[in-house]
Length: 334
Image 1 (cartoon, rainbow, N blue to C red):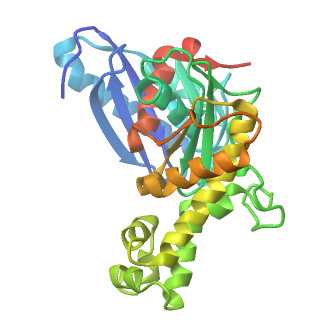
Image 2 (image 1 turned 180 degrees about the horizontal axis):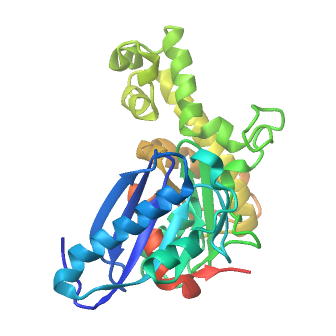
Image 3 (image 1 turned 120 degrees about the horizontal axis):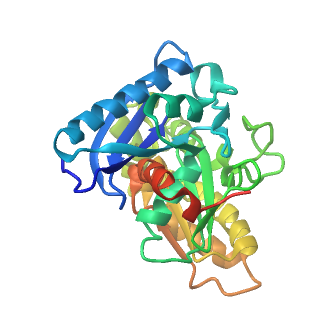
């Protein structure tokens, strides 16, 4: 743990369906302390809110003994829909009770005595990339961020600011229709990108290949256990199993179609791929770049950078810290 020379500290919270990651940072965004806890509690949002408050206070005590620190603000990314103006969660599908109409910002503000801002977790990760990743050193960068994991979320930065829209919901890149009559999606649509290229969608194809005896290397790696088929094990097997490589490539091409749509609308400087599936690296970025070039014909796309997140799994936490320190300067809100 390092200490900050200033007494001003900010807290970032990356709230997930199974755990919460927290960090304290100084006004520049430099992390000075981190912690985490399980969100698998009694199902009551108030329990998790109380745990966040207690964890923040414990971290402050750790730092404050020698730095005289006080909490100046808290930013929090949440896995679902939130009213960014009021800090009231509307629908967090992966948490017990789904946190409908919970005044999280108000509760935490009362516990900690500081301003509290909430934003969707994918938009928060986009903010992390903007401030501490690909956007660092660029004041007017425009990019789209695809968060590819259990689902597919996203966010959009325009000229150095996060674009949120009236409800804070702009950037749901995973819910573009890619196949009009494709698989049903949890959002109510059919053929969303999320149904075709999320981690579970890619792994499902790996399971099918193993069960049909078409992926001997993947079967060897997983010892024939379908529960061990993940995008990680598929990435390991792809060099020797051509059909596994093709399954990953197909998902990447679907992402490429979605990215091409975004490029046609936004003409961004970059397309950034984050989330747990981004470990596949060039197996994702190269097909995405190729498909963008094939499907966008109205202007050159060769200068559009397609890359994986520079922050990896830390994007959400770093974005939550930026949400606390620089809300007004980086978030384009309505």
